Image (cartoon, rainbow, N blue to C red):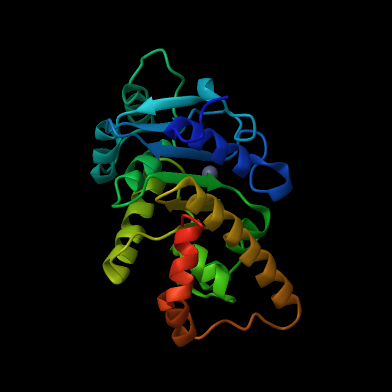
Amino acid sequence: MIDPATPLGALLRLSHQLGDPQHSLAILGEGNTSTRLESGTFLVKASGSNLATLDENGVVECQPGVLVPLIQETGMADAAVDAALLQSRVRSDARKPSVEALFHAWLLNLPGINFVGHTHPVASTGILCSPLGPAFAQERTFPDAIVCCDVESVYVPYTDPGLRLAQEIATRTEDFLARHQRPPRVVLLANHGVITLGRTAEAVLAAMLMTEKAARIWLAAAALGGPVCLTPHDRARIAQRPDEALRQRVLKL
Ligand SMILES: [Zn+2]
């Protein structure tokens, strides 16, 4: 077994946790994970491999320098994006990275972000396929959602997967950064799924599981005439409480 204290070991463990069938976050080849390496490259799940059973052969090491500049490109053809994905591999005999490696590369470039996870969770994606997606991103219904997922999530309207989606994620994440002076923990993709990002693999897992729990609570509250959401004052209070900051440190968030 690969040491979970190494970046590859932590990435594989995070992948297995996100792919665990009990969480209903991803089936078959859905979802992907990535981590930044000290060498400046990053590891990302290869296209088509399975999160629950991921091993080192299903992971590919890529150069962000090939992918991140594409976020500024307009009108790139699918074939050119594919060629760039293949060119980004450190080893030319490695498997092809997922087209979602584009947003992984960009998010891993943010300050303090070492891990990114992406899944298609049942309850969260259900809300993101409804008119209430933007409200689910902006509101919080209970304190632990703030501890693990911050005071709001980034909301991205449905966008064609690949380069266009990575560009839309970048634009809306930059807007969050400008307003909060820190990266978001959760990016919600309408009609698609959820991305979580953080300093540690634990933070990525916690934000993903808590987003999905918040979605299930939201659905339960909606059946009873709600949800009733926390006020902006209550949200800000939780975000600033010293005991919650201590809990975040203990949980490696
Ligand atoms: Zn996806």
